[in-house]
Image 1 (spheres, rainbow, N blue to C red):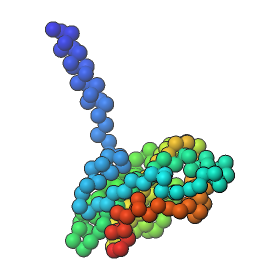
Image 2 (tube, rainbow, N blue to C red):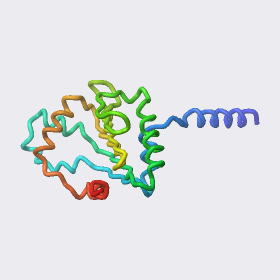
Image 3 (cartoon, one colour):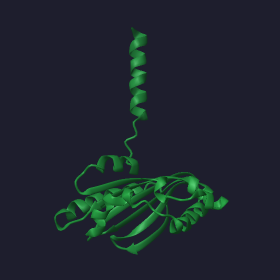
Image 4 (cartoon, rainbow, N blue to C red):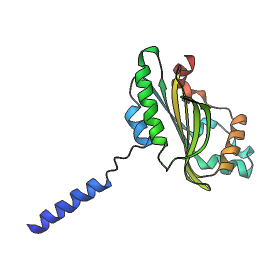
Length: 179
């Protein structure tokens, strides 16, 4: 009997300890994906539509380091400005966590963009682009991969210019762009 009570207590304690209530972008995406003012798009690496045989070794490495992109955008209107501010502040607070290392920041005040990453300089797991403008809303883009580094990202950008992007995966974002 004592063993069962002790075992149950340990399991309950482990369950509580393993539940991390700290906010994260992943949790934020999951919580808001289906809400009416949000648009969510998951983009696979297939969007690049590349002929891999024509890529250099460096370009292949960069493309192979990229897994997928998650995009979550909030559509701002005259009627939801209070909610826009609340949600913008939530994302800003999440990105202040030390695990998100800020690379750059553009703009001033409440309009602008930032680029952050998770991981080390030579093993980046996630790039995060956060852009917001009061009139349009905001977008958070998570670029996920394995063994990414700044050189891979720069190379990937150059490869994007040559790619035949599959626009079908980006159709949900057209609503936001039309505003």
